[in-house]
Length: 78
Image (cartoon, rainbow, N blue to C red; front, side, top):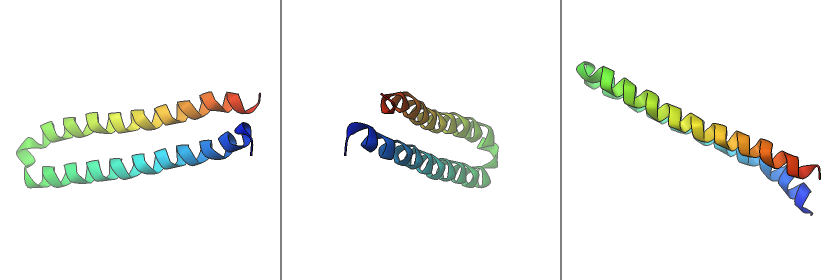
């Protein structure tokens, strides 16, 4: 198996794993934030702000994985 073949197989698997991890992380973060807001409604503003910032970081990591796939796809054709 040469470099291009292994890269062509690994890239979709890698971005798929990144998407699954992101989905699980976002689900857990949002679920925990909703539970915390239910327990302490007076702190909902602070909890929601922290949740949105955390969700943005999680999504940024997934976007970086997708961009890496696009960059390495250029190595397959050569």
